Length: 252
Image (cartoon, rainbow, N blue to C red):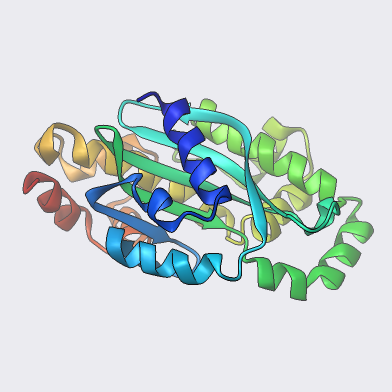
């Protein structure tokens, strides 16, 4: 199965509100990780969660931009749009990072802006954009360009990467970029960059059954400049230390 086939089938299952169909994209030991709420489900638990979620969900999900693939990973952005409204301002966006095990996902990590929080704060957010000159369509453009820059150019590998440097690459102000990350992705600049670094580290720790590469070397190679920062970011994202994660790879 190609990455495109996997993602197409995955979106179809989401849009059909097919809990079993979505969960079938996970391997038998696969995990789905909802990063904003720090919740993780195995396949059976995920089906139960989705059945409850789909009972209330009124969104249609679509691919936003390109599908980015590496040796054993897939990454993409998505847009959620209310099915009963044509108002683009009600859309919200997210991104998923998928570690593959053959034709199925060993882990899916979902990053998104909380829709309820976005709706509750929409009046404040809109006024803030109006004052700064960045409207919601501008926010979405910056978010998409930023994701492309990270996924295609892999700028997160630069351990000295800064907010002003990224803003220069995107040809936008530091303030607008900060708004795009904070309001659009619901996280800080460092958390946003570190999610890419952790995902890259997971791929290396999983390679060859988790048997190659010193953890310090892996941390430095994906853009971290210290082991303490790497360990903190890795555990925040995965719930495990790098060493614990590597051991689970060796056992498979």
